[in-house]
Length: 225
Image (tube, rainbow, N blue to C red; front, side, top):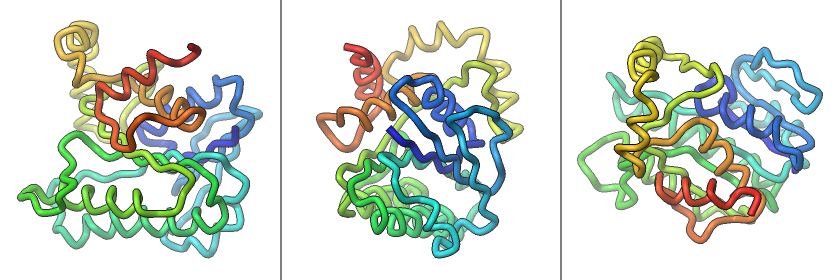
């Protein structure tokens, strides 16, 4: 498989890139983002793009891939709905529309979040925007599209969040992460599990298109079976 990752320097993106590089059936990984990953691997190619909205400027680099793992995202804290919509809905749809033109047979995976509002009418702004985005992506003519709604994600293998507050939180929680996973099995995943689940839907699909934490864990249990 040839894999494309948007947001490869974020915490989830780092995990996905790592698992993709380790996977024997992945022959190439394209990491697309505003900055390079800084990683060196024969499978990996960085594509640093100053303005991701300008898809016409880099769409020529995106053809020939089997799957896109879209891990870009921003926190809605302190943001107006119009600004959050631009960076969440508008950007993702601009990329998806460019991709479906050059890779209509690809699998598109979007990392959404637990609590996303598919009705698009709820009171929580971020959930409403992401719900509208999920619905729009599911209507696009990709070969397959999956919406991942993980809950709490624990970083592994030295992966760190780019957000300072999250780094502090993970530093506090890391010693008790096994206990958290035992106590809340349907709410806690690791970066490794999210990456493995993405690769699994790219290989074999999934029984449904919107996947919660329990669904993702079930997919991971099937890897290699």
